[in-house]
Image: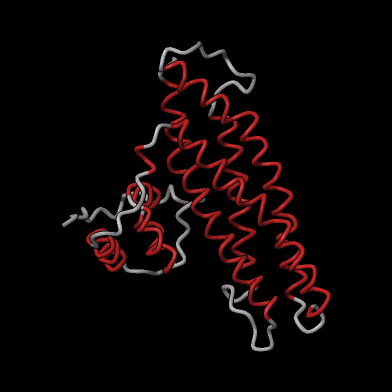
Amino acid sequence: MVTLQKDSEKQIGQFVAEDYRTAAVFSKYKIDFCCNGNRSVEEACEKKGIDSNVLLDELQNVLNQKGGESIDYKAWPLDLLIDYIEKKHHRYVEEKIPVLRQFLDKLCRVHGERHPELLKINELFTASAGELAAHMKKEELILFPFVKKMVNAVLGEGAVQSPQFGTVENPIAMMMQEHDNEGERFRQIAELTDNYNPPADACNTYKVTFAMLEEFEKDLHLHIHLENNILFPKAIKLEQQFG
């Protein structure tokens, strides 16, 4: 049995980095574990008016369940984690955006008059699509290659030149701010869609679109979590080895 230390000062992101199954508990209470994972459980519970002991008990129950252990991303080498993020999450975003934009445009044309919230949802998702495309390119062309160079240098394969951006903390700070922006956009989308519950008069396209938006948000939460709570802190520590 896993014993969870009743430490309400432990950061949310740390819980999720150690076992991703705990993300479901935080999601249930609408506690942001990816963009705002650097808050303590106590702080997050106080803000939401939740008893931290109740939340910690639920986390304990999840961790004690056998057979459902989550992938230990924390143990992966940084270059493997980067490849995984690019191939799984970046590719997912690139594939889903055109389909969702097409469906949302159609919903606005057909149902926009009766459901004006669709116009705002479409506007938010279109903004998110553009920002995510630019964000992922910055990671793939600037930040990720530098982290991989550091990994190779530790393995004795080449040296690390001082990057133009100074320290790895600079692009990381920018990426985290952009993650916050996307987190806020999807909080608004979730609110406007009544947490992705289509209205009574929804057609099949309506239902499919809301289901796809919910899946997109869940993937984005894991994507941001892997970067904010695992990749970025480890990259900062790795850079410190080079003085």
